[in-house]
Length: 424
Image 1 (tube, rainbow, N blue to C red):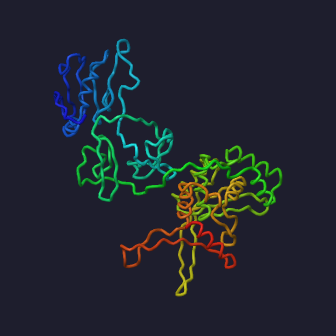
Image 2: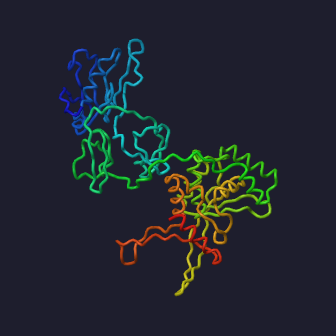
Image 3: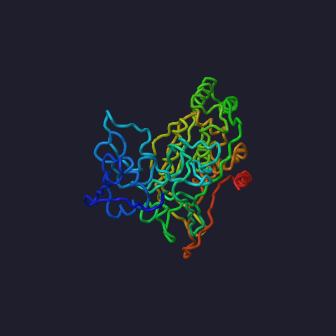
């Protein structure tokens, strides 16, 4: 419905516009649109005012058929429409307001919480309640939100293909909003040369995980026996992991993506050990406060209780062939005291104790998983250990290659090369 609406609009005051009930025989009340003069010109660009008039036909309608400033074409009512009905003579509609159409082409890639994408129209994709990546405009940051519904309809408005100078492309209906420097704008109101926001991270195509058991109770028992745990302690750990639905652990378990992220970060930016004496399992995570808070949230999702974040000032001394450097830095960390946690992640492949003194590889089972799961591990590992982007001195436009550091005792140096070979 892209034609300009040509019906009567009588200005009541600076922000109200009336559609007289004489406009169409059968209208029971006037229509009333709340909008500024600038907005009313945009509102005329589709047939939403016609829907305001149509709502005025409903039996029992009281006062006005009202439309708020965000009015645009809907189903039945316009989106942004409001009407009050008499309790005795009025009607009840389960979907009078309709909904924002904002249709995308079925092949449009939708990025999810775990960094994989699926085409919005792909068969078998269960979008309802699945967290997808979005952007919180009020806070200016990326976040996730659960999809509430998925509808497939034939568009009533024009369909546009938007292509940016950088090569990004999307096909959407005319009313689909895009974020610009002037705020959100419908696609039909954009012109060539307008600047729209993009999200450059593309993610990885979704693949279903194999139907494979990665960890069972026997494997956990064997590990705990090697650590000198008593039979009573072993039973408690196994029972706890079963209560958390982490044992047996299947490759298609909903907790696995979170476990993989935690495993990757723990391998690069944490320590895992059994404390001497009571052999209680313990893990400590180090990093930036914002990163650690996200990890803490993931730990809670899978059922573990991390400690609060703790900060302390540390003094460092670094000696190079030319000179020695001393500096202080704030260190953020948190811990997890749980033998069930330690047993789970040790069995999944997290290194125990001092990483420089032990040989370890990327977990063999992870090599059989889909690429989007492998990406989660690498992203967490690199987030802990990869150097931050930086430019060469005196060359502000030339970036230095990223650096991944790994320390090993000389006698097991080959194991370090093997680990780096695994992640290539």
